Amino acid sequence: MMQQRNWTKQEILDLYNTPLLELVQKASEVHKQYHKTGEVQVSSLISIKTGGCPEDCAYCPQAARYNTEVKVHKVMPTEEVISLAENAQKGGASRVCLGAAWREVRDNKDFDKVLDMVKGINNMGMEVCCTLGMLTEEQAKKLANAGLYAYNHNLDTSAENYDNIITTRTYEDRLKTIGNARKAGLTVCSGGIIGMGETAEDRIGMLYTLSLLRPVPESIPINALVAVEGTPLEEQPPVPIWDMVRMIATTRIVVPTTAVRLSAGRLSMSMEGQALCFLAGANSIFAGDKLLTTPNPEFNQDMEMFNILGLKPKAAFADKHKHEEQTVNA
Image (cartoon, rainbow, N blue to C red; front, top):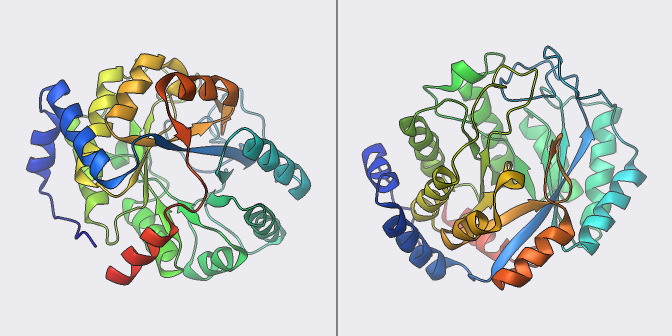
């Protein structure tokens, strides 16, 4: 079993600043060593409770305090969520992520509904991931017992830049939630967003923090900011595709065993841009027409891209054995 090496911030920054083609080539070699290069996991994200969130995340159209087009919806009926998961499975998805615009999980009927959704989707042979805000170890255990495979809780940015983006919860709160998910035996999905006005050092700071976690997250989503009117970041220019390629390649080299997810912002990326991201080590995407509340490419569009690039969707639970080994060695 490979031991995760301890990178310094400076080493990661030097890597990030490597000439682009050289960096992609390095990342591609690392990718080949640890993963099947023609396989990409397809995940589908279902917003089970939309809008009305009390947090002030500057990028998020679901925050109640911002005047955006997002309508507030209560928790969806379980049957509807199961039906959407079935459609996603038919479209080639092997993982479903359930997202709720909550600050934290509360022990109530809504949480019981989520547990039922997790059981139902897990019974279909799909990996289930949840992103529900902060949660306790006890709640994480309930989710694990229901069959949850992964918990998503992003760091978003570096510890230094964090207060410029969010003031309603701390960086420590985020790390604590990740710790609670770990204690319950769940795999962890945690990454961030680029294009929020941060520096290259901030991008590296976030990646550095993720690289220090033991075990490292099994999944790291790299999101490009989708600037939404009505949010404090509405004026941010789109992230250059080269920044995404750089960030993905650096992530792939720093955390070789992790699934690197090409997440939000894909709709504005050309197929050539996405191909470079796959070459640089991205091996997971979100597919389906919505990514929580921002537009995303449709399944059939993605399958066409997979055909052209010679990629195939990864089967569910393909990394389960790797995760169990990692947990034993942590």
